[in-house]
Length: 233
Ligand code: DC
Image 1 (tube, rainbow, N blue to C red):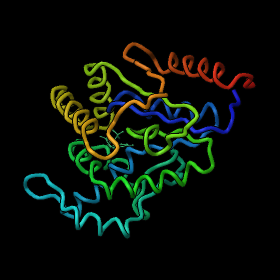
Image 2: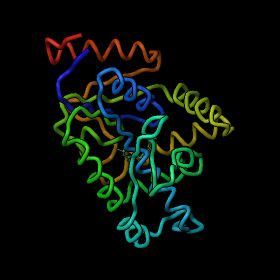
Image 3: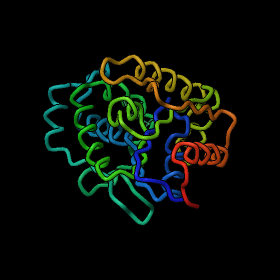
Image 4: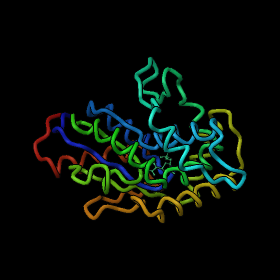
């Protein structure tokens, strides 16, 4: 299906399957996929590795802000698809650990961190034909995105998906730990002062608790036909 040059913004709670859905949309419509959460995770990894957290788990905002000035955090194409890098080091695996997941929400609530990420994400949007997932893509990063989707799913379903994904990478965590992490991140992400997670007024809600990825593709094809009319197959 060939669709016009638009930006598709996908926001929603943690582990609602935003990135799997966005990746499939990108491959079906030949769009560029960007995982904005990976940038926040990359900054969190850098903060952990540089010892910016104190014993209470609070980050030193001054040192973090200074480190961002020279941080070369980017996406690069590899034979296995687009991956997140710091300099020439691929950090894709390290940014998905429970340790990073536990610290990423407070880091992403820091205004200088959000400015750093927003500036980079907006660069990609200039070319359109981009599908981006995150928490504030339709509200802050691309408020004019032509198609906005807000994803949600039952907490238990999300926890099972996240635990399975972690197990497939060899990290075993209890379901209770995952539920606790999701609950905490949902709370911090929705209550922070800068760009909290919230549904844009013009976003369409997609609750995929009982939907497969294929069901979701059928749903979005229908929306695109309805919105953009005569798209060719
Ligand atoms: O999508 P994810 O779970 O990988 O995102 C990790 C964290 O990054 C999430 O808990 C909140 C933050 N985030 C954000 O604040 N804004 C975005 N656009 C994307 C992610």
